[in-house]
Length: 480
Image (cartoon, rainbow, N blue to C red; front, side):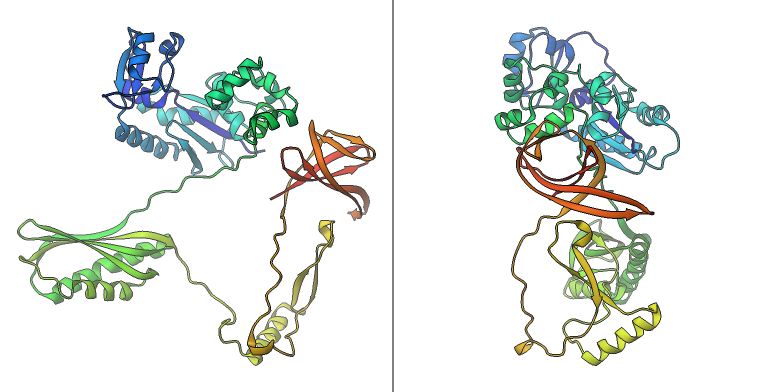
């Protein structure tokens, strides 16, 4: 089971502005000086009745002794970027949700949850901001663990019970939806989890299915690690004057050799070069040079730079050059066995013979076919070149159709209620349509397995593959 850490700085924009100030006065954070709105507030201002979204005038009328601060967006982004870089020392897999909230995937990291939390806390200690770090089997459980208390670790088996007393604020609901739930007497995750799933989703919309799952401690949201900015550049400054073209292009060749070497080591290709020229009179001249295609080839870059500078005249000798590779793409060259625009049938036959000689078996191709059991949806057959090409060399197009793809999930036992021999409810959700059963008889290491599989459409629109084995029901996958 994977363990995720959730790192949260409560009221992050306000915390950045306040810093280490421990004053007891209520604080409000506005988005601007003039006619601003409240975008964050501390617990004292919230308890006094101030709310996010109010104008500063409205909030100050509710909390007259509050101190009004102004959001510094640039500093907030810079501090958060530094914090994310600091978390890289804990694990290379960090997902940024928003400023003040991040998830860390701890798979493959030595230690246990308590040690990981301590490491994350130590990495962020120098920023002096309040931390709430929790751990859990999925993203929502890890996030909610920090709401329970800093350093809380939720186990998958106990998560629903531990989440039940938490307020709906954990879900970051739309204020209107939260108000409607409060009017229904639903104020905690436990009360939300006990609502009938189908009726709740029909009343509150498709997002409610996600809220209902979170309240039960279930979260299938994938972990998406953040990318890292990569700066690849080379420069020559203070190494003499360049008065003629030959000297300039020699220096550019040296810089491009460094750039291309770095690109190859990183497995990248550049689509844009940014050249900055510094003259003896203090002037700086920037040039953006677009490449025809992403490349890490020194000669191709030099040819384009040479063409760009061909008609440029400078008023003073050059004393500095800087070249930066921009708009980086993944590197590598696409390799094909046979060019599709010029296929020679005899060459393909020779290629197939060589492949069969190397692998020691006939070359086969997979054919799909319509079948409900997964095990019967494809077959292999010998690959044979067609004897005749279609008229005019055109390849007939297959009929356009969209086939739902079954995404296999970790098999888990589910609660299924049956009516008239068919599934009627799945984990409390009503079944709108049902197809099946399809009988599967198979052997696995000599043990016979027999099960009945069904495709069901649930009332919230989700389509699932479930099966019954003996007296138990299991979830096998979900259709995308």
